[in-house]
Image 1: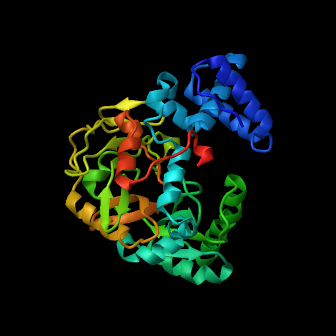
Image 2: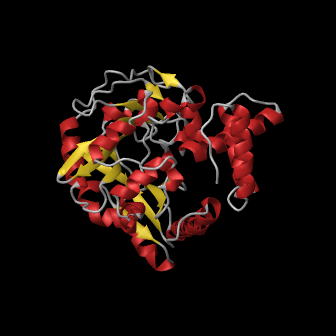
Image 3: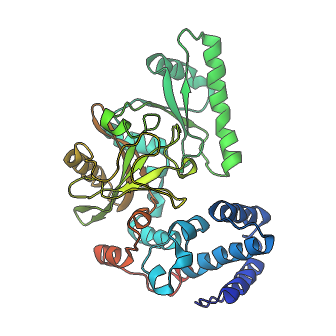
Length: 374
C-alpha cells in the first residue's frame, strides 16, 4: 500500500479510492455506509459528490495518521497542518503504545466485567452478579429482593453497548420475575448479533451507584464519573490528564451517543480546569441542563481518589496503561470499570497533542512513518 503525505485534496481522494479498491474485504458496503453516516452527522454537506469526497478524506487520514472518522472531526484535523497532526496520538497509534505497555493476553482482566469484578471486588462498593442460564434464576431473585433497580451490562462488551437500567416493581410475583429474567438472558444473543462483539454467554447485573450529591448535581439522571488514565512506570503510578464525564439530556449513560461532556481536571488539585466539550465540537461553560459551571469545580475527596486509583493500578503487573472510570458514591470512591484501551480524550479537551510528552513518560517512541508499519 502506498501513502504519500500531501495537503492536496485531490491526491488524498485518489489515494483513498485506491486503498478502498485494494482493501475490498475491509471496506464493505456496511463499513462505507457507517463512514458516510459519520460524515453526515459531523458536517453540513448535502451534495452527494462532496459527501463522497469527504468520506474519501476520512479514509486517507485513517491510513496516513491513524485517526477514526469521528476523531478526524473532534480533533479538528481538517484545519491542522501535517506537523500539528503529528503531535497528536490517534486511535491507531494509541493501540501501538498500548500493545507496548500492556500484555494483550491479559486484556480479559479488564475487558471481561466479571473477571474485573472478581479481581477488584473490594473497590466496587456494590453488589454484582453474573447470570447466563435458567439455573441462575434463584441468584437473580435474591439479587432483585435487595436491589429493585439495577444496571444490566454485557459481560465482555465496551463502549456502553447493551447497557441499560432495569426497575422491578414492588410486589412482582415469581412468574413475572421469571419473565424479566428470561428477557435479560435473551439480550445475550441479541447484543452479539447487533454489535457483532462478545463471546461470553452471560450478562452482568450491578447494584445502582448512589452518587455523591455534589457530583450528581451536574446531571442527576446519569452517573457522573471521573476518567483517570494511569501509566505505571516501574513502581510509580502516574495520574495522566484526568477528566470529568458528565451526562446530558436525561440520558442514563455518559456516552458520546448522548452528547456526554468531558471537562479537564488538574491532576494535582482535582479542580476542573476547562469548559465541557463534546465529540460534536460543542463547548459549554455551564451545563446546558442544570446551568452549573464547569471550570473551577473542585472534585470532592480528590486525594482519596488518587490514592484509590494508585492502589488499583499497582495490582496489575502486566497492564501498565488503564483508563479507570471512578464514581464518588455516598460512601466514597468506587470503581465503575477499567478500560484496557481507554481513549485519549484529553487531547480534544486541551486542543493539543501530547505525543512527545507521553513518549518521554514511557521512554519509548514510534519508529515508523505510519502506524500500520509498527
